[in-house]
Length: 358
Image 1 (cartoon, one colour):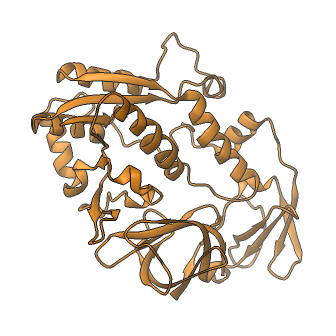
Image 2 (cartoon, one colour):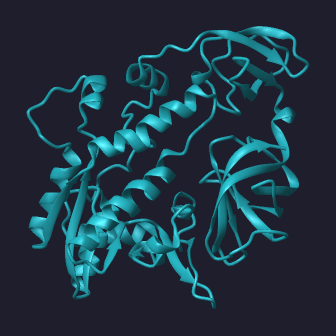
Image 3 (cartoon, rainbow, N blue to C red):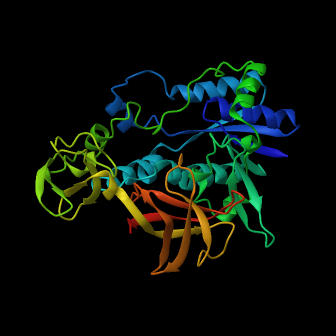
């Protein structure tokens, strides 16, 4: 089979490509050039003669070492338009976006997949720690990977059916330790390469500086109020805050205070004690169905963050979205993030974008 492998230049995607090659498949590595856009270079103050970021050279070197084809797909402008710009816009609205989930839907499993099919590939493989399952009616879904500490199913929760039937995740049945061992056995120069950073387009993870530089907007200061509406301090722009944040408010209080809500219309940050962070449920919009064609009245396991231990909830579809009522109150339900609904077997039933906590 002719299989395209999305290669980031890291350990996981490199091992994926070589594994498939050794199984007898014709492998074509594809690396998206997304991070050499001029806006990034200006922001990061990097002026080099290199046309591409270092990760592309790593991927190309591995393809040459193991004698398979490698292609570069220029997606700089579309990445900026569909991922970076919405990321900045969400923070300016007081929401906390999930750029990795959007990138998977709009870039990796859309643009890369379309390109892979256009050059005659049957499938697109990636180095995600997840699995593909199929129910009795033929619907595809993403399932948790074998290595629960590395499971990346959460980030794949918005993939549509047409993409799922064309993708494979060879690492889903392996632990990370086994993949690292393979990387050394394959003599990969990236075997000791550190894990990729949280947000790939913000190397120093300074979101505030990045957003202000990219958008040329410096949001106005405003009030910080307690849950009773009393003014207790001033904030320096709502893009600097996210639900559950404790540090950076500059407020003296007898107990630690956290950001419990952000009201962008009034330009205020609402602060409260830890117990005020707990929610009884959430309302989500933009449902993506996977294993199930309906989420109504289902008892499920929910994750609202990638590293979270799933918790129990009852779902109710109405108001053009889905309500999730938790068995036990949960902390830090953040608008803009994804709520992913699993069954007891680790299959994703569906997902939605968190609009508000209840």
